[in-house]
Length: 322
Image 1 (cartoon, rainbow, N blue to C red):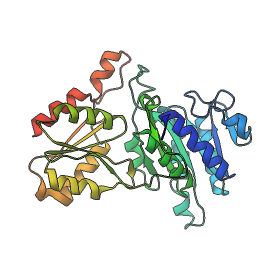
Image 2: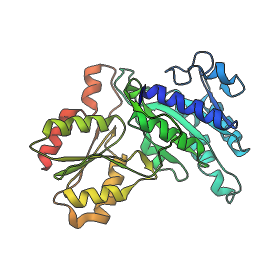
Image 3: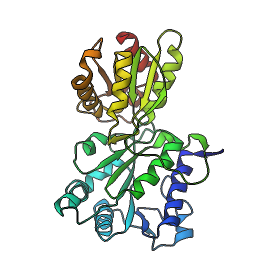
């Protein structure tokens, strides 16, 4: 198999879907000849032209509002919000229009819309450019929420998102863009709602999202021989494959959820709720959530690191729980 970066996998998914379906088009800031601020759209403007790679002014409400209207007519827009932080500027279009119009029209309207955004910390961009806001959208009925952690999933899940007839929030972590991995050629997708057991274990289950999957695997490797850790990547938070998580917890009897977003009211709390309700008798201890600190993200790299879960934090939690 050939080797691609996470960024190249996203680019290839967009190109393949635009070639497959002429209704697919891109819309966002700096995605024209510049190729996107992170380079995800590089070369697509030259190949497909400005009609299908629509560069916009700095107006998130215009980007998503236009995309919602286009999706209502049968087009398949892929809108980019340069940083997830700035989706706050178009929350009405996302949560009151995109998320609800299919339901409010009695199913007469479809909403084949993908909103891509970059999130997470690790680049010292401070409080307004470093947030992890997935829980907002998990809490909004009508939206699907996707967080690919690997190169393979970045491509496969994006293709699935573009083909979906419902609005999808597709969240990418900037620190993953340069990650490389083997990716097969040919036509393939990754399904929504199917978690992956990244590593099997018997002492404790760790459910982690996005970048935290890699930190959890590092922790599991360091503790191997002493503590056997099962690591699960849910891939999609809506729909959530709770069955795979429950089967793991029934085996290990312990659960730790790790995500970069603040612990308070994060997706970890929802996963713990479902596990407690459905598998309480299998637990040997209280499930725990390791998330970010409940403060705006500092600018200083040392403070930024201190505010988000690291490998050492995961190891500490695991040792306390086992």
